[in-house]
Length: 301
Length: 116
Image (cartoon, rainbow over all chains, first blue to last red; front, side):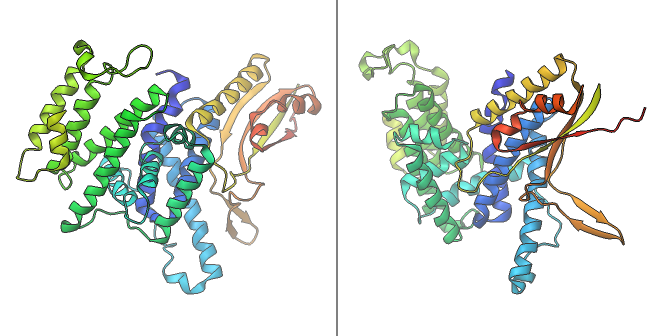
């Protein structure tokens, strides 16, 4: 990998993991703190790596630094809290040794539960998509603004308000229990579906960005399927639908960026691997008797 | 030639600022590499120093140990390098290109007392 791509690449893959893990550990009310810690860690990386060269394992470096920062920040917060509100003394966990679990399992778990937290009913669908992009896909304010054909101030305010709301509602970062999981999963899938559509049908001129939106939507859906608790037929059908659609990504747009109708598309440009995957997930989705709208749409696609 | 310690201090990001994008962060790395490369090419660089973690303790007489200085305090030292130059003026001149200045930080230049 080229050096100049390294930080953006790490940002894409690690930002969301670090945010999810920290938020799960410290609660949604500290989302701003978590974001600041991650942001500061990346800033320090730019300076430190510029001066001293690359660490052997950049990801481990990021995890270790953000953990130390978290330790520092929360220790300080605890002192502050104890001084201004002695009653909170017992609640402040300042004396517990702070451990942050960077195991693959916890990283995966944190992202999955974060997905459910974001899709809480207290915030609008628009904001849910924005937050998903921001927190789970590592998209910056500018990119989200571009995807929504909006300006960065509007998006920034929308994201901030949504985060405030999640804080105020004290949304728990956890997987809902048994019966509720289906209901919440519906919202999660709607958001993922819209996220995908945003990329597939959006009017944004930025082709790379649109493709990335689709890829991110598929990645998050795959995450649902990877977990036995959320590996439900409807989720498989949704991923199948996304695979079928994206298999035609290259065929549906000509060199001028105009749309080409299905009948006129060059079938050689269809991506057979994705078609195969689509069929695979469609088959998996046929377990059980439940038929979702995604089943029907996938079958048509 | 005398040796000088350059101490970097950086203010933390203001809370309501929009965080920088990954591309912007990546772009911040280059000036550091370039600045060090120039210092090194002109044989000014003695040591590329170290970055310091935020956590710290201060030890005072009578076994008094306090935590800090905390990151919010502007005086917290973020890192240092050692360069060589003919005079403190020349060292200060070399520090004017330090990338920390473009993000609201500062550089303190201190001559290291020679032992011979």
